[in-house]
Amino acid sequence: MDFDRDYAMLIGGKLDGGGGRFDVLNPATEGVIGTAPDATPDDLDRAIAAARAAFPGWAATPIADRKAALNAMGQAVLANADAFKRLLTAEQGKPHSEAEGEVIGAGYWLMGAASLDLPVTVNEDSDERYSETRRVPLGVVGAISPWNFPLLLAMFKVGPALLAGNAMVLKPSPFTPLTTLKFGELVKDMLPPGVLNIVTGGDALGPWMTGHKGFDKISFTGSTATGRRVMESAAPTLKRVTLELGGNDAAIVMPDVDVEKVAEDLFWAAFRNNGQICIATKRMYVHKDIYEELRDALVAYAKTVKVGDGAQQGTQIGPINNEPQYRRVLDLIQDAKDKGYKFLVGGEAAGVPGYFVPVTILDNPPEDSRIVQEEQFGPVLPLIKFDDYDDVVARANATEYGLGGSVWGADEDRAFDIAQRIASGTVWVNETQHLSPTAAFGGMKQSGVGVEGGVEGLLEYTSAQTIVRRKKPHAKV
Image (cartoon, rainbow, N blue to C red; front, side, top):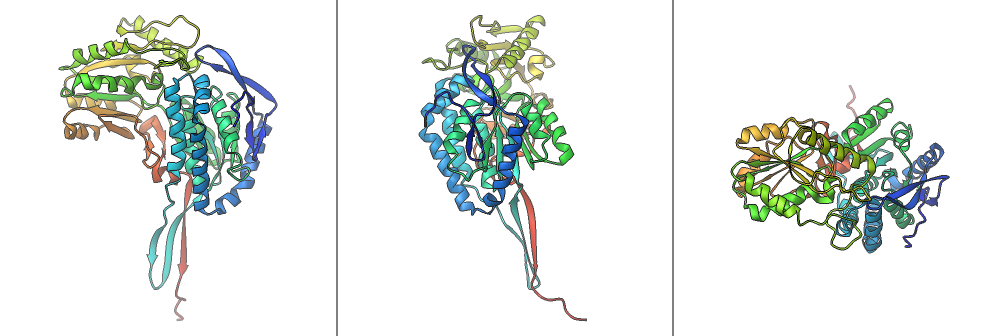
């Protein structure tokens, strides 16, 4: 497939250039790398109509054939991984190595979803009746994916929704639409027309989707603030929703860790993808006995990390993806400066073209500071000292978020016991950010509604239907 500058929506199995266009920028240079279609309400209506028309036939397609389609799509992504990674870096900013990992993960996520099965539960099989509960597709799903992992997180939705027998209209972020549009072009002939539609547009398109009567479900990944608006917009038509929202993940580092061995892993737990990960470590609680040693090790390692254009060889951290997020991160840094908090490294804008923020680590800011309480979603990490486990668990849990968290310690059993006390949807021990298409992933509290991944995530795209068959006629009186 030609990964040129011709980007079109996918509606009803056909590539559609739409009417208006909008620019897509490279966050490392702030230069235009392409234009994407700016969908109108009529474009959205056409995409939903195409999905509605395709749904009955796709729902009736044997699940084995739906699995085969997902496997073929996944293989096609892998076969085009090099071209995808270069386009992904250009529009998202992440280094080629991380972009390649995302693309490969997207391909395997589709194939992993295809390994799942819809359960059938036999409730009763007696002389009088047979009763079973099966899972049936919802209809047409509206999927809204974010800019931090535009291809992979879209596949979190595409895989299970299509496997369950739904049709879909997918909207990528206006900051990163190009990779998703090329995915649509790649797979358009692998599915019946209208089963998967991809539309792009500006800020108005999302609300058009969440309020549209043509959708039976909205699956959204993004901020908690936007998630609230999605739920509100979906309420009048009682759409199902899956919301994967923000996080303020805490890492708890116990005093028995080998600092030399764990420092690099802890650094990347916070700074992978430039900190633009919902499950990145946003707060790092370090036991007082090793605080200074780990602090110094993290700072020393940070000074060796190359920040720059993700397309340049050797770059380990790229730019912030977009200007609004860049401004938010700088605002948090400025607040920390205004409050007099101590910076161990970083803290200054890069002063070059592009949305670059240097790796920034703060030394033990107060618990009630903005940099501890808010989700920074950028390369800024507060280190916080603790000496009591009950206290640190309470502090880790004292947030409206509950997406992820991690505990690090040589005593794995003790670390596991602490992990079970963290009020988050996923908690890792001695690693972080490991997700699987066969395991449920979702948030507690205001980090989301519902889950993605695993059988539980697949069931989010279905309704339960119980079928009861009477075997014996009623006895005559």
